[in-house]
Structure formats: structure tokens, C-alpha cells
Length: 277
Image (cartoon, rainbow, N blue to C red; front, side, top):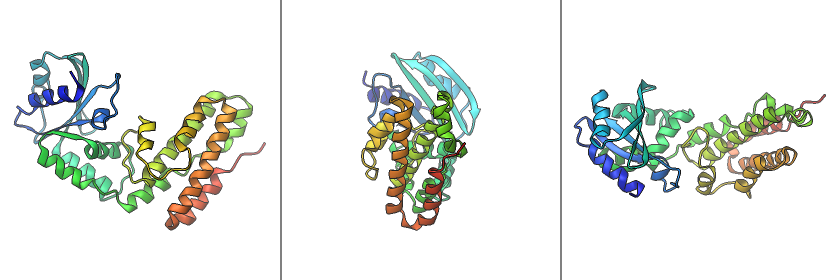
């Protein structure tokens, strides 16, 4: 069965519980990015806290096979199970929790990636039940605030002190640490581009990188292909490609964000520093 149709079928089981206010498809399926490796992510909003029977009942009704069943943690209940050859990942929240999380990001401009991932899920999510509530939440996250844009950019322009050691790591052939540094900087660049393009980060490790970048309209020339080259070429070439990307990112930011001119210049100067012998 096609994933969206299977998700709709499962949502009808959950909506039988009067405690459930809304069900939506999240993750890759909600963004039409799914492939043969994809599972189904469902987000459930509850009027009141579910107990174990509320969570297990739907799985037992469809004769699903439980993989994981986690206790309440970080304001979320989660479980995974197999059904009709597909893995379901269920994330449950109190409705009031999601409203508060959205306010923290949209109104208070919190750059925490975990919070942004929750907001991105509701922005891109496909309602299956409780459409009125979910559409109200979508409306709350429909505008990406200017202040959040600035904070996201500045939060991702400090590459850390280890970036200054890149030539030493390269010459020592200290590949593991060099790659850790390079990946860290690439993640920072992704965060800055998400902010510049007014997009909420949908995964803390920037999963679905190419698809995410295809959504962006403001990027340095060849950004997607160059970012991929960093890790598939020899480290000598990959590092030079990354340095070129960094130069172009700062040039773009100087053009697009004149209000941050002084801050961007400071981080730009820091980014070219190389520790000498």
C-alpha cells in the first residue's frame, strides 16, 4: 500500500480515541521526499496525557509489531512498530506543549534546532485528523521572523577554534579529526543558509541535504554540488573547496544582510585565520 494511504488508514484508528485532538503525517512523506527506505512518521496531539493503553491499543488493533516503546521524555511520548511491512514512528505531544514550542521559536526567536524541528514538522505536516487545529498551528508558523533570521545566521558563523588548526591536521594526515572539523563547519553553513532563506531546520543533522537546498532561492553559485564535493574528494581538495564555499557565503551574507555588516565582518576575519607553527 502507498505510504500516504497507509498513514491515513492508521490515523483513522487513532482518531477513535477521544483524547486525540489531531493526527498528521510528518517527515519525508509529508514533504514528498520519501523513497524505498522511508518509514511513516505520525505526530499525534492529545487533549490530555495518554496512558500505555491509549498508545498500545491502536498498535494491537492492527496487529502491529512493537519495536520500541519509550516513556515520556522531553515532553514527548514515542513508539515505533511494524505494520504491513512498513515502520511507523509515532510522536505524541500535548497540544498545549506544541503551542508553547511554536511560541518559543516564532515569538521569542529560539534557535534551538530541536525546537525548530518541531516547528518545521507542523509547517510541512499533512493533516489527517483535527484539520482546524493543525491549520491554526500552520498559520502560526507561516511567517519566518526577521529577528529569528538574524539570530540563526549569527549563531552559525563561529566555526570554533579547531577550524584554525585545519592546515596542521591536513599536514599531519590526521584525517578523523580533520573530517570532524570539516563536517562541523558544513553544518554551520547549512544552518546559516536555512536562516538566510527563512526556513525552519527540519532535522538537527540536516538530513535530506540536497532536497532542502533545492527549496532555497538564495545560495552561493553551485552551493549544493560544492558542499557534496567536500567529502567525496581527497581531503586536500575537499578542504580547499570548503574554504571557497566559506568565502562565497560571507560575500553573499554581506550583500543580503547589510544590517549585520559589523558582525559578519568579525566572523569573516575569524574564518580565514590559520594557526601558524
